[in-house]
Length: 173
Image (tube, rainbow, N blue to C red; front, side):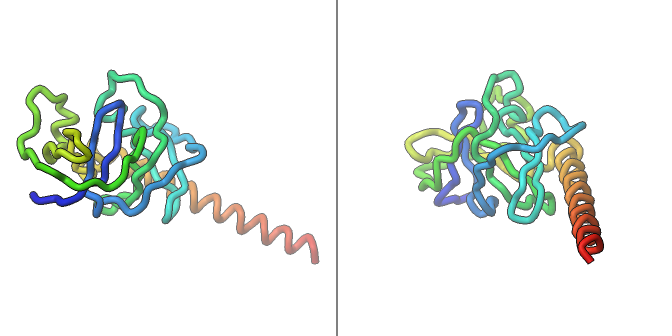
């Protein structure tokens, strides 16, 4: 694997990176909507470029024992057909890669190792190079389920708005 640049970000105080071609847009949400019944590592829902997105709190997902704040920045995209946003503490930007270490560090938690492509050095730091597609696909499609619920809720809200508009037109005639 030869990446020349990575999208650098931090989660739970850990320096991370992703392939910039995997991310469509970086968002800074005002407020997250609740996602009832979702796992605790799904921080909520947010309006994205193509509708509501499930927000994965990457820090809570990969490092569940670490304390952290709600995600400040979101890496939005459609990952293998699943619209989602990856929550990060901070997006640092696109940085050049100075070296790549293919073998992941030993002793990493299984959930981290499962989503790891390797280690890169970018911005003067060693960073976990995450496979964002595996991160979204993990846990038997929980993110896809939440995304589907979000789409259904969005469609229901659009239908409700449309019927309210029709009622107002009828009343004004």
